[in-house]
Length: 484
Image 1 (tube, rainbow, N blue to C red):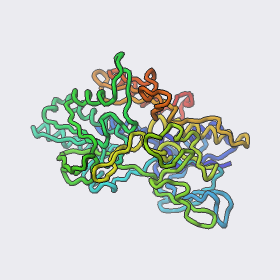
Image 2: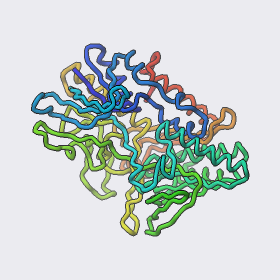
Image 3: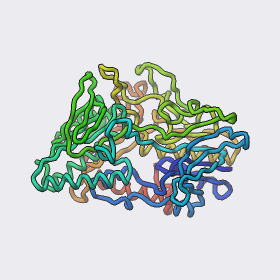
Image 4: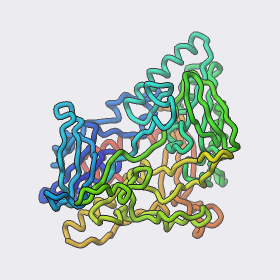
């Protein structure tokens, strides 16, 4: 049997590692990824403030895959033929190589099972003037974060000369997600400027499409902190106030020009915000992968939602916000059209946002998309791998492992500043990720499992997790014992 995994991020790499561990040498596991590297994305923020180098958060995939016996193809998927074509009855993926020695060459890679774990396409072009090479920086990849640090150093040098600098950080599109990464980067910049005694020359502004700060695309949360129950809104506002960070909420950035961002607010008004340094997260979509049936007819809309993420075992029926339920969310991540195709991590299409959708007075949607990074990506990658391995070994398609985001908990360590003696980290857990208002009518989540604390120990934990998850990803001894 041949299992093809598209993508080698947290979800794809996790799926491939467990598939090979369970299937051994008798079956082929093939990974297709456009990058030669695995990168631990959560640590990109530290590259962006000069605390880590790219080589501290990445490694070359081929060396690890050769050791494991996984076939690696540095390429991107361009089309899926789930029924094969007139020349073959096997499903296959059409790929285009991105490796320098094969650049542009194409190949058909046949599969018995396919796992789509491609992650997001960064849609900088969805906002005019957004992104590296234009008017803002990014921390979405290690090369983007390296560039961000180069630009940040320029602002720091100007501040050392006594020149005030305006920093704008947050989301760069009305429907963007990943507020958490931008939030961490904001606080790390504030920490670094304070450490250099430059805070009095800094004006830091947070801009976000969240209805309230601390929403993070998951409708916010109520957490236990210091024996009290606090909303993430109050928690976030307090952290911002302590660091002298201003905030703009309910804002959809529509256009970025040199030194100025144009945005619309939910009340329908248009505003501008000037800056000297800006890091704004772009909109995400799935990559441009087409799908065709055996007759060569385009069936992309059968496999993919309009946002190009893959449809899975979720309820995509349009319904009012008040009727949304955790039952809408997928459990097995199997596509309904083809039982041998799965999508994990960011690659699967959510049935709806987690935060309540909002539109401006002008009809512009301004609200966060649902996050699926980190822990949910690893968990979904693992359970799909275990189910496929079981099906191959037994010949029976039985989903013994499930992982609904309406039942799954998640832990997150928010970096508030990198230092072994003065650093800070906010430790947060939520359970479940998608609020269950039927089971937990007061808070939406299990308040005993949804907690938040901030302190130096949080930084140590985040740093420990950085090395622990790289240990796991490199397949070092007992890697499978490290939880997702």
